[in-house]
Image (cartoon, rainbow, N blue to C red; front, side, top):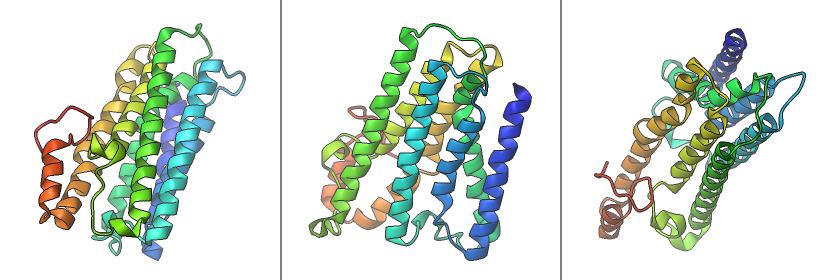
Length: 259
């Protein structure tokens, strides 16, 4: 099992390395998110039990496939329409700086997928339990939360009457980053659904999946960047400060100290 995961790690980082070379050569980040999504699909496919896939494994893989296809298509469409990703503004012309996000993407893919990779290599099966249904239910909740939040924001931004304004309607009324909340929920769900099949070190490394996603979005590549951008755009708008003070940054109805 360890050697199989090792091979998948090698494939993962090889893909990101090639992506970095292409990105650096053409000074573009247009294929960054799409590459990440396709890597999720490829590694999940390669990790499947080749002789016999259980119902649990098929559902788990389907959840990853559906999420990756949807998010990859959405982000690729968004960057084609916008022409660029502002996260790369200070690194687009620097190969050494570009190297970091590409390698971080490789780390994100493999750590996030750990519960699914472990589950896919199991040759024994157990009857479906309440844990499976709770996990898949949480995945569905998180997936729908993310999809709806993304669609609401895209619709808002496509409306010319909203130019220069910030979104504070729909799910965005209850969280400043509802799409990230959904993302965290769905990966936590996939860990829960696979947890009772994991043994030994798998339990401890598998839980890194939702933990890593939460830390990544909350403190590194997600919320801090978007919060800074929002303050630059709307910092002089009193209504935005009211929105910030009243609306939780991530979890609906739970307002932690402001970031």
